[in-house]
Image (cartoon, rainbow, N blue to C red):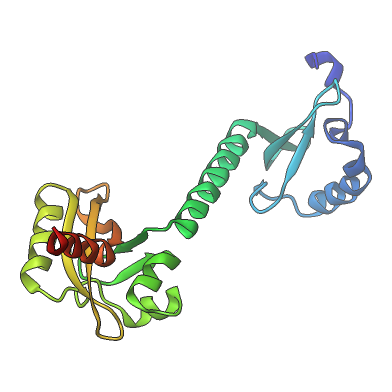
Length: 219
C-alpha cells in the first residue's frame, strides 16, 4: 500500500477476509480495557498485502493518551524469515533423528559424570537393554568399561584432544557378557568452554575380531 491508501481504512483491511469479522469483536473488547500487549507467541497470526499475499506476523499493541483521546499504537513485524529458518531447523532435526534412530552403529551421548543422556536402538541392543528408557535409568557410561585403564584413556583423549578415533575397548553388557567395542567421538562444550557432553559412536567388533583370529589360526 501507499500510505495515503491506508489512512481511514479499518485495521481489518490488513487481514485475510476469514479473520476480519471475528477481529472486530476482539478490537471492541481490547478498547474496553486497552493495555500493552504482544501477540503472536503461541498463535499463528497472518497479515495480508494489498495484492492478496499472506505472510506470518507478530503484533504489539500499546495505548497512548493524547490531547484528542486514546490512540492505539500497533507495530507489525514480518516474521517470514524466522518461520522459514524454524522450518529448516525442524526438517534438519527430523533428518538427524531419522539417521540417529536407524543407524546400524551404536550412537550415544553422555555427561562427563558418566550418565547417559540419549542413545539409539542399536546401542541399546548392543548392551542388552530392551529400551532407551531402561538404559537411561540403569546404565552408566563408566560402568560399561571392563578395564578402568581403558576408560581413563578414553576420557583423557576426549578431555585433552576433544576427539577419539577408533579406540577398541572391552565393555560389559547388561547380562555380564564381554564384547569388544570400537569407539569414536568428540566432546561438546558450552559457550564458556566447559565440557557438558560426549557424543560417541560405538561398533561391536567382537564377531569381526573372532573371524580374524580364526583366519590367523587357519593360516
